[in-house]
Length: 176
Image (cartoon, helix red, strand yellow):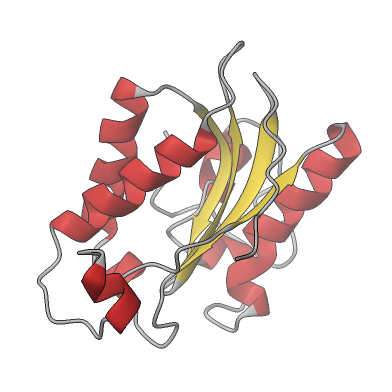
């Protein structure tokens, strides 16, 4: 069995990619309120700061900063994934191994995590997050994707409204 090594740093900032098990589904954007609730409920019990986030139909990218003396992002992801899955109707395809453990088949078990090293690393990952809907062809302009912290960042003066295109600021914020 492969042992995954995670870099647990108390109070650290991390970039994550989390995918649905069935990448062809659109569960995240079709159930955005359920995802928001799962994040909100988790943050009440286990606080963290969402520095940046984008939610696409089948995956999401996020940057979190954990509280000082806390390194447990794994519990937070488990709670978010299970909270979201719990409100969805059953019936998804489930492998034998998941079925034997009583698991749903909504999410990929693993996720990608990267410890952010410095301000430059943070800025590069923020740009990656916010440009992702354009990269995947969902929109032509960053500002046209509603499920992104880009709009909050524009209001904060971090990005201009037309960053990476001829943009206008009229989206739904996720991470506030």
